[in-house]
Length: 356
Image 1 (cartoon, rainbow, N blue to C red):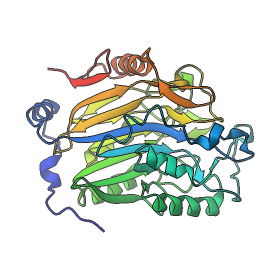
Image 2: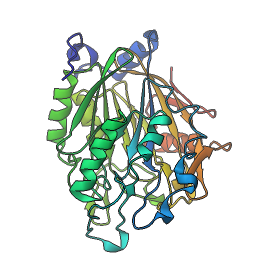
Image 3: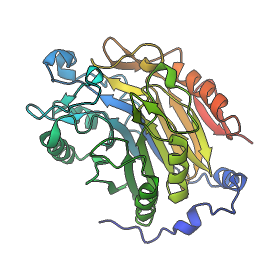
Image 4: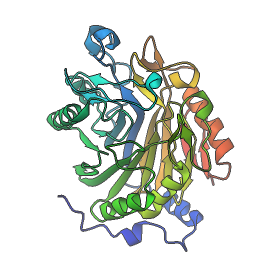
């Protein structure tokens, strides 16, 4: 396992006595060697289950063509892998709500499309990561390793540590679903994150949580229930993750964008919505908005600046640039409503800056 002996967690993170204003001041002073992260939300580029009807034209080879000029340009490029990588077979999951139950079986070579688009880190903690049973999970793990894509989020694969451009990164992910690290067990999440903090320079935490759909754009200050399932208290989770050592917290799951928040100098994206979800997802209204978020951190992991790139999904789920900048408008509106005191300014062109 890679370790990061030069890192002193006590120097990089707030204690209870350090104010947010001090962290923000440090961000503005330390803009030398910035560390960049690109993050997308849910990615399910096509499923061959129950039939090939839900695969994109030309076997998906051109699916990411319109986004490649951005994806892959950061030190780390992340998305949530919504499904399993398996060519055939597997045991489709059973759900407590059969009418809302779907299983995603993504052909294994589609991992190559992700890699070619620049994605090098994925979360495997979501409600579709065990769609095809043990066979699907094993195939997903082996396929991601084959294409050199880092991953974490399964209960038995909770973390990953990797080096990019001379920086040691740690990553861990959580969801309220069987076979994943439990989003609702915050004491365990704190332990996992605290332990990982000691072994890396920059620590990325992801969660799949919150209610879903058009009515779920606002962040709730409490537990969110959807289809009878506890989808977590996402504010409590995100704040606890940062208190435990996370440098950035990236949310997904609601299938719509949600607000951004700066907490103790660290950025939280409560949901990045859908990004490339072909054939099986509702893409109406904000569910078709497909943002990319690029974030720059200083060498202490504090937020310095960011950029929201607006894409939308057309046809049955192909991401293309959105000249109306719908993602920027949504993030700006929701952030101002849900976290009016957060020291972030989202400009009309998508730039995200710290207020004076």
